[in-house]
Length: 63
Image (cartoon, rainbow, N blue to C red; front, side):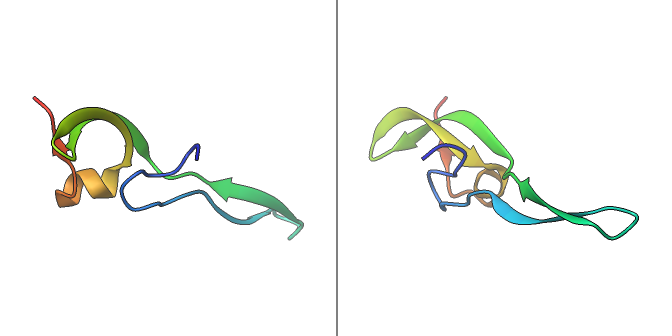
């Protein structure tokens, strides 16, 4: 499960890149993922977590 948050499951979303002449091609928006040392199930682990989960306190960082 590359490029997805291990806490909330946020993954890339898709849409269109729109040129000045209104030609539409596919593009992707990637979540802002950070690799952090966090405590999960009582043990420290390295997780890929989105910044919204970090900011909201869903992740307890290991010190």
